[in-house]
Amino acid sequence: MLRQADGLDLYLDSADEADWADLMPTGLFRGITTNPLLAQRAGLDYPHIDWADKARHARDLGAQELHAQVFGPVEGYVDWAAALYEAGAKAGLRTVVKIPLTEAAIRRVPAIKALGGPILMTAAYHPKQMATAMALGADFIAPYFGRMDEAGLPAHDMLHQMHLMSRGGSTRILVASLRSAEQLVALAAFGLDCFTLSPHVARSLLTEPMTEDAAAAFEAAAAGHRL
Image (tube, rainbow, N blue to C red; front, side, top):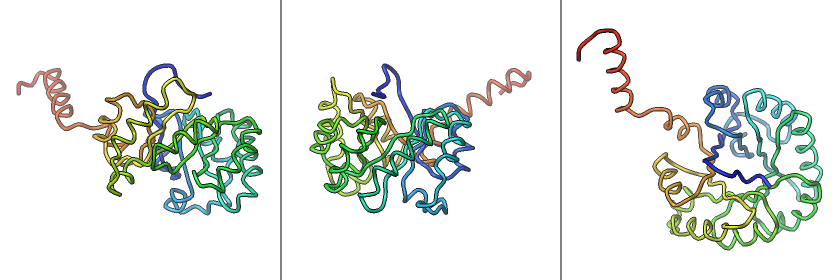
């Protein structure tokens, strides 16, 4: 079980190593999450990614976890998951296998779990899928908050229901598809504590104009200038 006792856990949602190099050294992020779409955006050929190399690079940048998603025919999921777990073990960080909440993929979960590594059920759009993930013994579930909201679903209410369902359980909600820091704040305010952020949203956590103005005033005062 990967649940943290206290605090907020953030992940960087990117397959672009330039984003990793820029943002992981800030110390904000517990780990990195990826998927085939993010890899495509980064110009990567997902079936041919060297996950051992990715895991080493993520570890060297301070990541404690690297999440990557199964793909292709479901018959190949178990072997792919085993290779990802091995890559993580050799690199010295946790690798988490992401599995979409489709029926065909769900049916492969028992065999993947038998490997002994952590799993994340991804692409959740409804609280009923929280029940599925919990019953499967998943370590994480990733609801796509931004996409839910943009589809006209009552995303806040649904996330609140999932949060209530998760209490006392071992399946942690890792909120994905956030469009802004304001969405993160609203969800954290009712108790959610695990988020994966695009580089754009991640960078927005590093700046606030009024703080920049205050810091400039401090520096001016230290230099003997009156404002």
